[in-house]
Length: 192
Image: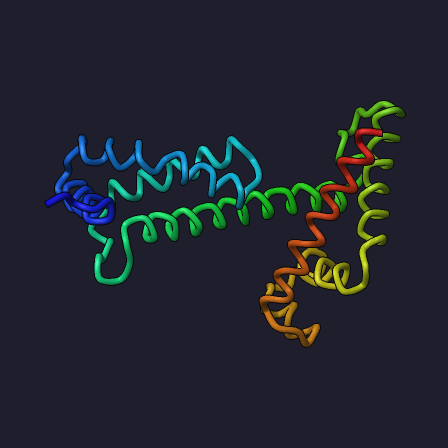
């Protein structure tokens, strides 16, 4: 009797939980291209997607005992793990980029370039601050207000949602959308 792919995957995960490197290698070779494709689709960046593949398979190796065959197939478990890690990575990227945008916006021209700055450096710093301020001001009010509350007033996402009277998920989505628009606007300005 021939063993099915799903049963073979289950056996591989049992072997991986027992520390079998050959089983891990076989599972990795079978699924790493798919994990990479899914990660890349979620994140949109090749190098970050590659990092997710490493994270997912490291977690699979270290915590393979978490898999419960009665709850899902091995492939489903792996893809859910991939989705979670990729979304975590994407959120981390958004937070880092948001912090960079905010630091740029809130910085004083002199502080941004240093005390001994040349007039050209001061002018560039002020121009950059103005580009960001303009990009924020061009956002629709339903996107601008959550950014202002969360980043300039220091509210948590939950507090921002309460202040706006909208669900938390909607608030988070609007903040992500606003940050994405700001990134695109700033990239377009820098490439001009």
